[in-house]
Length: 254
Image 1: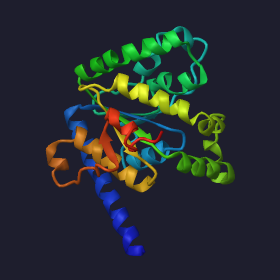
Image 2: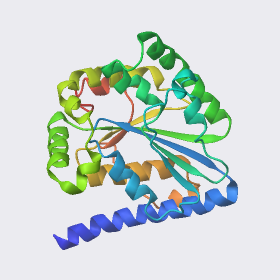
Image 3: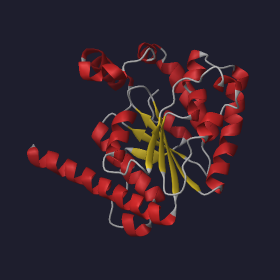
């Protein structure tokens, strides 16, 4: 058992070392990287981010998890407050939820109008094209879990005092509106997946395997070849490019 755990930890450390080398290269090249992490409630975004940034420089790494918009922000162009958090030279920015709130929770909970949601789905691909054409490397990842696993994780939040800060009002809705979230996800992925800013999906019931796959994917997407040549690519059974058939063949939970 200890040998297995040491092997898993060793593989993670190797990938984290790759991230350190990536950040060193970014400091020299001025590369700008944005990682968008989206997913169901309880899918493991926080834990994944913790492993990504664990050994990185806080001066060149930012995690953005915006609260609900203020009254003033509600009068702005929807994407405006996200633009303010985009990276400068040498910086890695991770969005723990992002502009895609408008295509997910806002759809399910009616937090915005149908017209606003339709406008977002129309505009998001153009917005992301402009980011990429400006030189930003954009990585979009959707973390997916089964309904059974989500229930297990949300129940654990309520009973573990160390997870008290993770509990939110949305937790109670996640299971009740499971199918509505599935439908919103499917529409979002289909409408905003593009050649220039593709979505990648992660089957995240196994947290540790999902974290390793995500870090490996980020490295292979944005790091110089000299850094990733000896690093494994993510397991395709865990992380895969978005495919409309994934909702029908069981790769994405319905």
